Image (cartoon, rainbow, N blue to C red; front, top):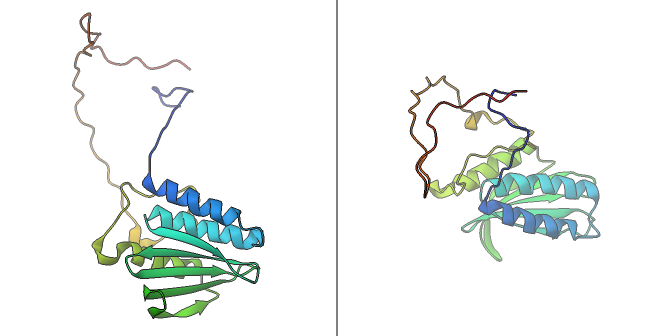
Length: 181
């Protein structure tokens, strides 16, 4: 622990993508005929795409697999997962029956292929919906296109200011005392 850490932490976050992720995840887990393998793989893609702020939906496949689709305007990336976990990737533009395939469907698509098309869809039209940086404990792929380099930033001089209270004056402005462990 650092000198100012405590044992009790409370972190509340709000992320608009979380509601979309929960909705699609609940739909995936409510599909009784879908294999657990297909569901888990589809769930990992839902986490990826909703993290980018994309609209998403899920559908059961007749073979016991499922499909998840991610939308941005009239473009769609669809990931179909078979009962045994094989992934087919489709990228389309258009709505309803009037659509064009952007790429030929890729059978046995790799995760990096799906990630590339999901990221392209999120960045399409220079629109980035994500209000904060995406950091996920479930990340399994390192994309060099999104790598950032770190540089040391010199610390700023600390300015001591009295803490004002509504009534009764102010508190001490002396520096923090490290917690004892």
